[in-house]
Image (tube, each protein chain N blue to C red):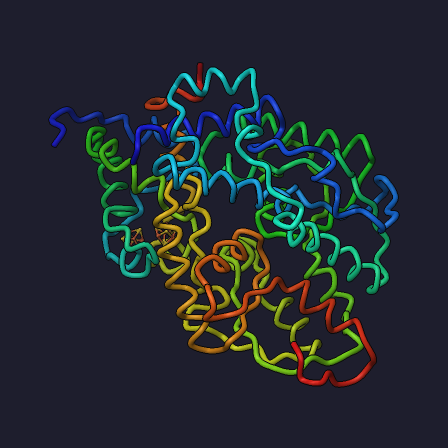
Length: 328
Length: 104
Ligand code: SF4
Ligand code: SF4
């Protein structure tokens, strides 16, 4: 492990403590997905992104910088870098994704809002108060920093008198549903992923797509949060034939993403192995986590088309009712 | 190989009461299913913790931090070892005692 990995962890932890995110991004970019939706602020039920999708293009820029600099992002900075980062947002200087690079990650939370509306769910957003959950800091074992951050996030929910939270990605779901209750006495939020909410409501798109997709279960959804049936049920109602790769459901294989911040080469190797498994059962694959999406997409090259589940589900809602013309 | 044994190591690493590396019976299933092919984590590193061999634990820093926390080993473990919780506890130990990120 490169010595600088400890600095990477320290910088990420300092950012969460000082700036409420491992990688602080401009507020305007964090809330771009809400444009045109006219969502109310707050309310009993909110759709919560935890900034997970919005963060990905920034992380990718840092990972690209890391490939130039060394083996771990921010590796060019030694202990001195950490001191600088405390007064200056170093990551902010290094990562400026273009609007095209950001657009796919803005689209997914927007898709989810449209799907929930079609299912008749009333919800608001916390806009710039929709904070990162601290998932990476939890994974890295920086427990005191995480505990303080969890209290900050919970105080925001209390300020808006939120009772139910609808999450999008598995990591934010796990943090808010399973980790925060162990850190905060009296924690009383009801937390469900939008996939669970749609499935519970028997959500069925108006149009049936045709074709086969390989399903890539997220480790966190499948093994930490028990979310296995809901995505299958929704894809099936959209008319798709779900193909199960060799490792699937509760025995799914990781995309490699969690290793990316410290060991990008290992992450890439695992992603390539997983793409091979998915390709063996279909020419298209569906993901339900931004880390899975970005990691598998990079490894996919031209051998398999990877899309987020919300893209498939929304496509099945658009256009005339009935069978599609075979287009996925 | 570290010559100094620290009998209280498991206690110091395992501030979380769920830290249970001692449940491991060294069957090797976790190693067999690990997608990264991690060879020393969890069972060997957990054994070093239980035996108080801090020097050996510290030498496996890279494996401790490259684990994906994917839980495939954990759902396959016949002894019900809380593997990922243990790995996080080990990371916390490194953060505090080696990287000095917390606890100051
Ligand atoms: S699978 Fe469980 S019992 Fe077997 S070696 Fe691994 S941790 Fe120990
Ligand atoms: S949790 Fe870590 S040790 Fe266990 S299978 Fe996954 S990567 Fe391997």
